[in-house]
Image (cartoon, rainbow, N blue to C red; front, side, top):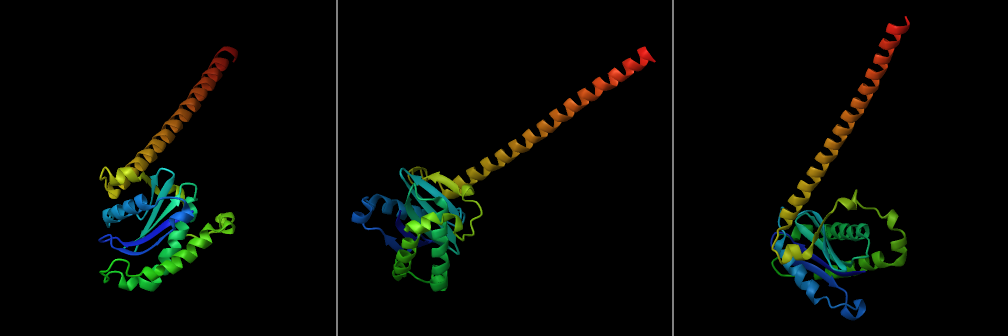
Amino acid sequence: MILLTVVARVADGLPLAASIQEDEQSGKDLQQYQNQVKQLCRKLNAQSPDRCTLEAGDMNFHFLIAQGVCYLSLCEASFPKKMAFAYLEDLHNEFYDQYGRRVPTVTRPYSFIEFDTYIQKKKKSYVDSRARRNLGSINTELQDVQRIMVANIEEVLQRGEALSAIETKATNLASLSKKYRSDAKYLNTRSTYAKVAAVAVFFITLIVYVRFWWL
């Protein structure tokens, strides 16, 4: 289930539009998560990752940044990540078409609150059971959701760790992993060559021995 959706300007964290699932419908108190969203939006900057998942217990924050705007959703942890980001892609495409040119000039929070109508409509289509069954046919630009950066919301908010710093760590880990795989491949190749050479030396020695003693 998608419980909360926020559209915010990255430059200053100004909320542009939002849609919140009513507490009685979701059965959850969303006030804590709303506060976390406000803090998170104020931490975003030009160096923030363009796609990220932040874990918050049994909930996940997913956000996508495009053209200076952040599209963020709060979903249950069981909600498929691929579907969550496809949902955010759809919001971006529609929002940019309608309000893209006006985003840099607005000063009032929730200047595009009427976008909630589209959010509600799109959210319903993604939560619908038929849409969940057709997950594999979603048309999305995401090539591999497994590569989307994952962090913990507490690390980002309470410890004050910048998202850009977390992304740098993730990039460094990916580089180390790539280097490890490369080194392992090189060592395996050397091991294979050594085994082939040992076999070759054995057969050459055997041939020399046979020729010397039997010919």
